[in-house]
Amino acid sequence: MGTPETYRRVLVPLDGSPLAEAVLPFVSSLARPLGLEIALLRVIPVVTPKVVEGGTRRIILDQGERLREEAEVYLRGVAGSLVADGFRVTTTVRTGEAAPEIVAGARECQADLIGMMTHGRTGLGRLFFGSVAEAVLRHAAVPVFVVRAAEAQLARSAA
Image (cartoon, rainbow, N blue to C red; front, top):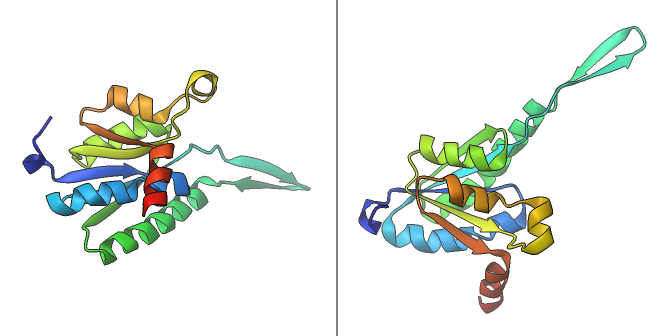
């Protein structure tokens, strides 16, 4: 684990939801004084193309490319707001399961820190839904800054 002086880049995984974006004010408050670059990441699921029979024609529907384009447009929008606020920002879209792709994305972009939201589920909710944040915490080689949904709501109320 590095000291704050050695931090250069923070990876922020986003899923397109307002909940995931709620980590951005927290990350910004760290990134500004430390001069960190913000690396935005969106992980899209693997989508198997579907074949639709249309009379004598077969039509192949591949949603993967559409999802990738939507993710890129989304990240450019979020990045644009951060750049307007004076941050250096990169964006990446990866395909696969969220937690392993977040860990791999952090490694590839040489992130020194990962900042992300969690729903903060406990008990049966955690058992049934699992926790991407927990898996990232377990497998990441860098520190992970996790904000619970309730903490983000309190911070927004205070603002």
